[in-house]
Amino acid sequence: MKNKTEILRNPLRPLIVIFPFGLLAQSGVFGLIYHFSGHATMAWIAYWMMAAGIVGGFLVALSGLKDWPIIVVRARPRCMGVVYGLGNILVLLFFIGSCLRQREAPDMPDALAYLLAFIGMGLALMTAGLGGALIDRLGGGRHADKNAPVGNVVALNSLSHRQANWTSRRLS
Image (cartoon, rainbow, N blue to C red; front, side, top):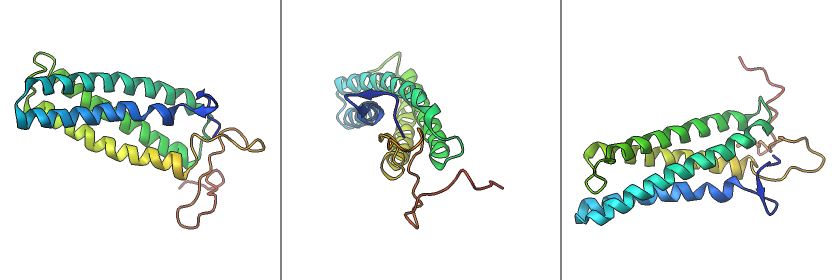
């Protein structure tokens, strides 16, 4: 698919999506360090990494919304993109819930804040795998062939390794 948002002729989303994911994952690591060491500084670091990851996640989501209309409507990547996008929104909601639980005392997170963050991290691993499939296997984020229509994502069948023809099938 010909990506609309580019930096130096490279698609933007694959370049920036790793930053919020890394910040959110590291907030969990620092939360665990705080839990086992008791150093309040680690809880503060975890809290602010989580807050930065949430802001970054919303910026990446805006980038994804800008590229959304170029995907062929009844294509497999569009269905996967819906699941990917909604899953990532759910991830952000879990982390927002954790961040709000810690708002009053970031240096002393409670059990529910941990639970929300770790559910968010588990779901983030699943959506990261789905995003990897969209980029790697289905060709999302690549430049379109000059003869291919815009939004013609290379949707290969995982069994036959031939291009899937999802637009001509009837869904029943």
